[in-house]
Length: 114
Length: 111
View 1 (cartoon, each protein chain N blue to C red):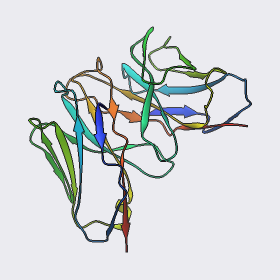
View 2: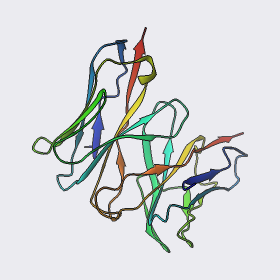
View 3: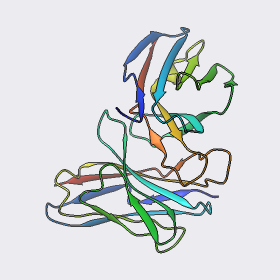
């Protein structure tokens, strides 16, 4: 079945540590996105990538880094510079092949700083 | 001004009621519009696409008003299972555009 897989579902990080969230898609989509969601809030764009080996900062990129070495994969690293990383992280992809760019989501990763 | 704005709610309505949400967008060049539904602690899922003159799917109707730059979602005969957060999404015509989400409108249906 085609879809987007995020792992892990739950992640605990000690203060000062970097952690990497995985996002893999087999939908052959060009564009991939990372969003952050805080309790009771909407989705805020962290980074997005429209093509392999290229990505752009979203609205809240500070303290995060990404790579796009393969079309299928768009990992997000939460660095120690991110002061308040506890949140729900969602990865999405879209085809962008014409009539609309509907986004498909992974099931999300809940990151907690302990 | 936010690129996509929604009334956060919460909307608390009785079962069987009709409820409507609006969403405004700032970029007049936006081409594609969607409503997503998000259940508590879950990922958003596509509810409806809104292309030109609107879209209807059972109890749900979505409308687009390009002149005033807003889209709406109407839910008729609401069910308890409709309780969720509804997210408005606006994007361009290709993946060259960002996908922008509104902050969501919370809906709670009471028995």
